[in-house]
Length: 295
Length: 139
Image 1 (tube, chains in turn purple, green):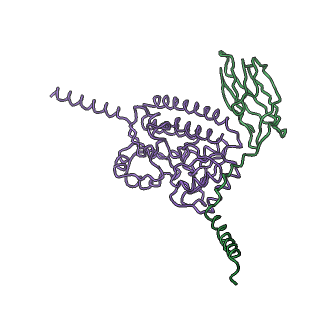
Image 2 (cartoon, each protein chain N blue to C red):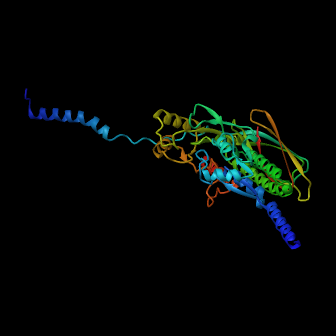
């Protein structure tokens, strides 16, 4: 009998130890939050990235497989500020006991034109284009991971501290780089109104133009207005996110004299093999494109 | 009524010419002229005054505007000032400071007081240890 009890106790102890060492299961619906969770959580987290690089988070809809994973997650990371229109369904359908953390609700919102109705202003969900917001997000995720696994408090604090130092260095790099661009040239014409946070912090004025990224042909009046704005403001480059309407873009550049600037990453990180595969890489890519386009 | 052949030929030529000109204009539309981007309002260099106060005199100070050096001093005093001429748009300027404090010195600070072309004074500070590269925005 004694050997049997010993064996049972050993098995139980092993199971408990394995359970304690199991990483925290995290579901992320943003490429930015996936990076934060991995940077802060290290090997103490297992992150499932539901929204992958290159996927438009505005268009993303979770699949039944996503919902199953969410149901088993201990922490679900969301950008918030209305980025995830499916958040209600997510709560209702998964019955998850995990914490649903709407990270973007941790800081103030700026407004942007609604894509469906440009006459209407909505919350700009692209909060990560502000490095201070990114730093707050890191602290929010660190604190939540610590609540789930208090024993790993120092581990998470140490990793978060290192990542925050990287973000501080990025902030200095951005300031030095943008200092090459006169303040009266800081006019950003984009086809996707996603850079309000970046603009506010760095003294840019945004002129969003609808119609270039859309297959729908904008009216001649609209195109004329865009051209007049670009000429009036002396804008040197425009930054279309994706070009689905090359005829309109050609007309605008020909008539206004503005050139097409580099591609900007508005909605998250780039593909793993791109220079925008990390947050620092993505931010440097955008700033370099803007500076070289507008100089 | 019939007129001379010469007259008829002249009339026919005039009719063809009258029809031909609009036809030629229609088929030879002028190439749209390349509109030039209206340049940002040309901004002339304007006089500003810059005063720098250090809690600890650095080994070297360099001030850059739009990537160009506008002022540099080796072993400056703890309080220095200079009149400078730089392009100063209404939106303000970013000045980049490269400051080299002694390697073993404690945390130090610099207070920059800029008097803009309109005569208004703006003050900004930065802190650092060792070699520091940072940007101050005025106003």
